[in-house]
Length: 353
Image (cartoon, rainbow, N blue to C red; front, side, top):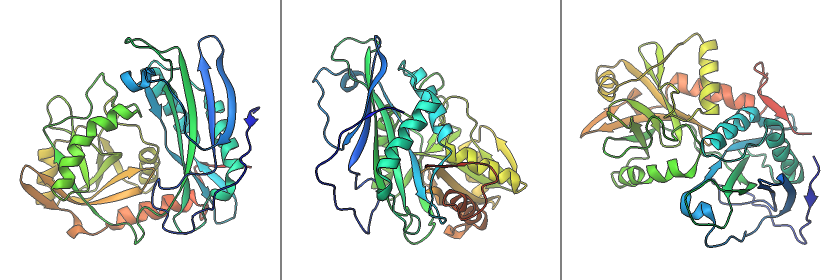
């Protein structure tokens, strides 16, 4: 892929420890412009830094923007890998369609990511559980007021070295079930990775944190009865001997980790039930012992065990607030594939050469 490379005079000192998540950013970023007249053009890799926009830039007023999240891994074999970037590319296409934004082909999306990773390969950490987080995003940058589809856009990619999400292992989290506010409804943008969805979730998250809970479990937007997803993660429940999770019908994000975990679970021999699970049924399963394990799946943490559910004054403790054997096995299996510690029989790893 042809692009302009703007070299930086002095490179940053790379962080050595305590990376956290999203605290540091690499020397360079990728940018590309779109207009109705030219299509995608002006591809650049240039020093990470501030961008200038007009006060009337449409994204600031009408929130026309989308983003993705994936990681680059330094494998145990010393090679650099991406994990299922084709799925992120396809989801980005679907997000942009819904937001009336220009599409980026799967091939171009992956090429842009790979070119930036090649330039910044020395930023990929090699500590246990560490990786390079990749944030591609697009926004309307036309300077205009008036509610209409923008005519110009900017696509960017920034990178951040991140540490293990759980420094001391895969630890259970406490979940608050939100039944007043809603995050998504049918016909909306629940399946889209856009900032508006996360903005709508902040009120519930704020309430949960004040009560001492880590995340929010969202219910459906119509009846506020059926379980959907947890914050930025898809939710799964081991009830009896089946895995129950919300169906992808337009209100739940089609997670890459979700799809990967479901594939592995099927290979483990589990029956997968994608259905509208009521919160009352879930809480009852927790009370009578049928709910054996629960966890969220997402790019950042891979798997977050759920140790407690709180709904309308009632608490349910899951698996004695311990990480379940299945949850741990899933975490170990998937991370072994991502870091090239085991065979990739699914062909999910893409080497960056």
